[in-house]
Length: 421
Image: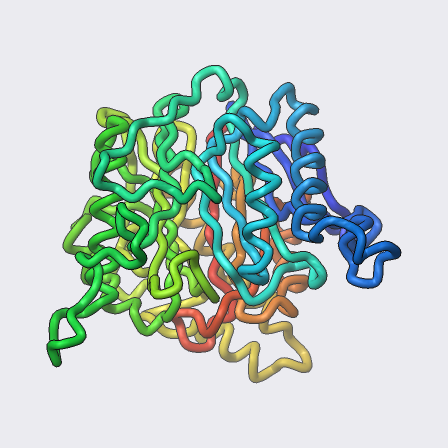
């Protein structure tokens, strides 16, 4: 059963679930240095008294976020040492180093697998970092960092996270980019030769290189490509999506993971075009995966995957036959009498409910909803759609992406996770 540990009221009877538990799982989303009654924590605002004498606001925000997260975890008998995965979204690359400075201290000695992405906007306009965290009750006593192969690039010392972590039968792999093992920038294997007029397609080389390294790490931890259950792919340009789909089909065929492909403003590698993170299970773990016919609007044909008590969906948009759903397009024409954003999210919720039902799950089992918006002004009517269906605090994080989503006219991509009762 899903239990909300902390929620944030946003008016009109609605609330956002910041931290919740479901069975052995803990999910905490949308963590920013914000106050319950609005605004940012002291010391962050540029006009705060003594601002020039204070520490970097990125450090202040990070301390606040982790202190609040630690308190929330403590309410369910857990701690920061029970985290198994963290995702960070930044408004500017300049705030990543101060965030890392604090994170290395508060999460020492083991920083779980991490993905850091720069986005165009966060739900709190004054915030510079938004933290997503996943944990397991009692994980501190069973987390095991797998040894990555020597030819797979390790995270830079400034980041310090664990690239692959086992907790129970689940294996979490940090976001990987196409950097070289000797830290010389882009790996040669992932580039094309500029002396040739044609030498392959660079995004395909980068995607292939990153997937190869991720799967090497998965195998070192006791998994393989058939036991990857979830993937998030961040692309610098959505024009590279067709090429990515080709690489994906070659690598996974019909046994791929649930996949979300998300536009990113920037990733760690200046010339990097892609970053991928994975969730896997140990070989032998039962997996139930369902596919959709072509034209579903997904980057792969897999719509939903269940592995034991965890269910993950591919990123959904309001699409039919690779086009914006007619009902959503019509609502846009009737914008003075109907909310297009509300209609768009209702369409997605219907799809999520249908796909969860195919693996024996319900909307009430949702524990993590990630919304990637082209315009965060749509957030409130979309949360209203969720609230009208669930009638409870909504476990949602929202960020604004860079550029357009894969379906022309779509304004949000929704990535959902659920835990069985």
